Length: 332
Image (cartoon, rainbow, N blue to C red):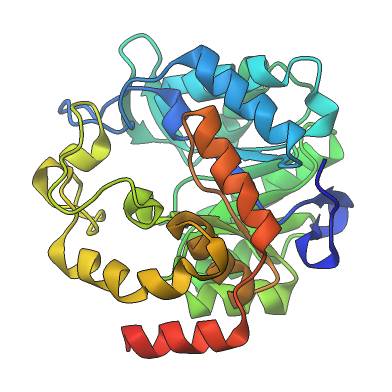
């Protein structure tokens, strides 16, 4: 078992929940699901037994934070995570999200519901799929929710805390103004936002520092671009969201080929990120830890080998200040 060091410690707001500096994102293990028009929203086919083994291996390696959402795989990701944590629930810190509507039979997503009543309905369903009596971090999954509606949902989350259904809450949004609305709540503990060595998020990181929040970092590896698994010219498989990337997914072109602009930027920083015996992914995670002591990156995974590689980033720790400076110069 890895010995924890001070830089690895995180506390989830006023909940008192202790967690490490690395979590795992459970989007990919949800398997295939799609938008109403049939375009893929998952990462392709998965082996549920391998996903369960990877989660349990992560726990063995000291990674205890798992972030999912009810919509991932139209409920399938939550069920797989619940299965993996059976008998080990108290070892894990579980986060999930709500707001998107989906059909579990057809595995399609469509529409959204921002009402407090639906938040309770979704929470009840997530608890059931996860096989647990509480969720440690409950997050709004609709990043563009109007501020007045967000305030109502924040108040609903306070009710859920009082009832013991959740222990803390947050918002998955890239807008500091919106995140600040949730941060006004007593038990708001985190904001989930995109950030990686290719695309920094200074406004969100500053907000987390000012409000004492944990920055749960999605896309820490730019959806695989910083994992070194998608070389330039290599195409994504059918059923993978990167094969037909939506407008917000600028790192890839049609077919899942890395966009030339981003591929060149990866190459520009590869040597620095892979110094000290790190893999490219481990260097990218080290950059995030050096960038802020409040970050908890949540790289995705589908195999035991991926879980082991990402967990090993903890052995290397944050990049050194001079490496951060060098990377900033290379990308300027």
